[in-house]
View 1: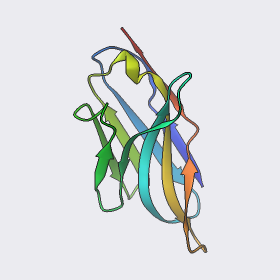
View 2: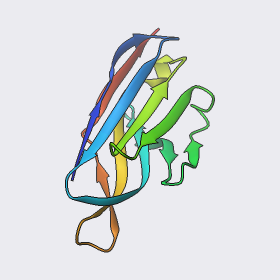
View 3: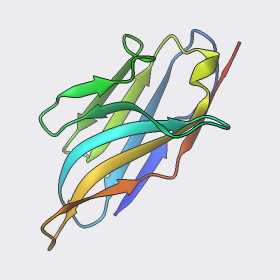
Length: 120
């Protein structure tokens, strides 16, 4: 299984970016998908997650600004980020709980990370 993240970049404060993360490989099903971020000198933190049923949860710091969604036909999760702030600057990682063909359990897979830089 591979998770390929894209969409990061440099944006001014108040701007928007949309991250995408596509899962590929011998996938039977995907449960939760999510986005995490890690800023320099800080621990990785959950930004947003979405279940297979569409339930979402967000970090308090991004509520009302970020929206997570998924397209199960494409095994893809998105993160729409609006009203970006300099403190949103971080490497963003996608994650997915994937059951591979032939296996009986879901395992968490991680994408490679995409850098988001918000200038003031």
